[in-house]
Length: 312
Image 1 (cartoon, helix red, strand yellow):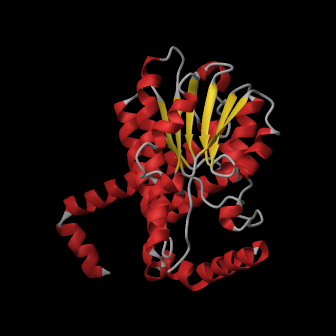
Image 2: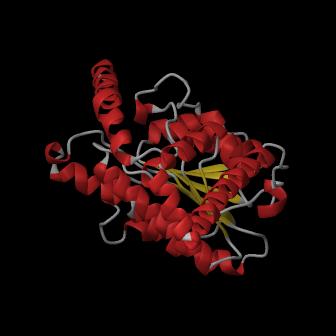
């Protein structure tokens, strides 16, 4: 200790630098905490007024989970809804729960790489006044990388990356000349920010979504382009996990999005996931990996296997 004191006394500039860095670190943490608290009292944007009452919202992956909940909640705000997914029966079930005008587009997004796939979608909706694009369709896989099949990897890339990219490409020119504001919501994930073992390909695809969103938000500042990065949500994808300290309902998830839409280009949405994201960034990755691989992964894998058996 004496030697350390002597070192700092003989190198006052280093001591000053450490003090400054410490103050900056504390200040950043304090500002983040203040921002988190203030957002709880911030009024939500008037979404119908901002994007145009009675305009259309295109939602991919709208037959289940977050996409289905978005369809219902946007309809409750008087938006018309375009439901895009592969299962016609499920889409018709969602359509029956929607209060406003709606349209079904049958699209198996695992075929996203095939020529003409998106042209066929656009032909069905090109006459609609679309104000919001929700790139929600996605799949994940919790598995050792070497045990994933080539088909599983190819499908995950096709579903998680290609629709987000090409639907944005098709609609941005229309959004640029539209009178009202427009929005693109890319549903990514906390896993796209913090790499997680056994979710390797999924994390990679969601990281792509985050980076694409960030670039587009800078390129097109007049369009509200948002990376929506929730953590665990109780859906079929997560084997319908019950709500807990990390897992939220689809309703809470979408409400978290509504609170942030029009304010920022990236968000975890619900306050639980904001806290989770902040904590993950402060935990050394070696500790996070150890806890996840030793305790959480085996439980999650078993939950998913049990869910598959029930379906079968």
